[in-house]
Amino acid sequence: MPWLTASRLPELVLYTPLRRGEVGQDDIPTHVSTPDGRELPVFGQELAAEVGRRYGSPVQMLHMRHGIFDDACISVIASDTAREIGKLTGMVPDVRRFRPNILVRLLRSGAFQEDHWLGGVLSFGDGPAISVTQHDVRCSMVNLDPDSAKPTPEMLKTIVRVNQNNAGVYGTVTRTGQIAVGQAIHLHAIGSPAAGE
Image: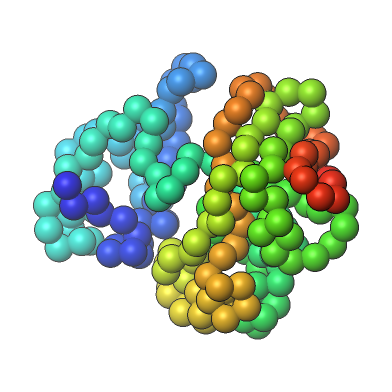
């Protein structure tokens, strides 16, 4: 099936998912805020027509219960990594370009430390944990400005040049639970331990 993503229609990054009405734990967004500020039902004909008009070809909305992912469902990046990439490109760092599920603030500063987490386990307090499985190999999505959808190729070129196209890591949930902003995170791995929040 040919998926329509922001790599083919950059303006898709300007659409914002919303939940209206009573929200349960497994509920998916019910509406979408369009770039011009309208709220449209996710599965209404009006949203499909709007996206199709921008794309230049008809589209159909599908309900994927657990979503779709490039390589894994959990993406983690350290704020130092996003900041360093922004600095090297001469741009204000914006972590939204990297679309992480989890943003980590390190206790020991330094970009691209995530590369050394492979094979380890990140635990969040006494609760959930994720196994760090692979590098997050970046694509052209990082080039898209989250506020304008304007492409800035310098972002991906910089990641390729300074860290072999890797920025952050992917993981798999090994223990479920809730996480919270500011919660202590511990890395359990062979070698020296690291921590953050």
